[in-house]
Length: 142
Image (tube, rainbow, N blue to C red; front, side, top):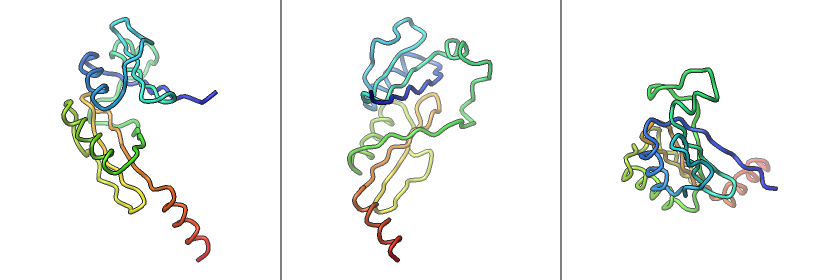
């Protein structure tokens, strides 16, 4: 069985969050339909659980980080440089903020980021794995 990841995110407006994640490529699933949470699927292995603050608080006694702090950076791969740019454009069109972090340009790898309406930062990246492996083998033989 493929190992899956379920990223749980606290959100202030569940409907807005669902619309945002649909705009950046996730599909809503039927995992949670109780008005306090929504399951979103990026792939067979990547799932995001959007939880109202009240629902999220049922899983932890810690306070929920505000927009001025970062607890984690999440990253999704893309199939091309153009797909990276398109993901950021889609996020902005859906109410997100483009590039809260610096653009990553390394030749074999290209990455940007966006912030969702609740302040969660997602990086999106493309990597030319063949060029990366070539670079690694050249540095080992040097």
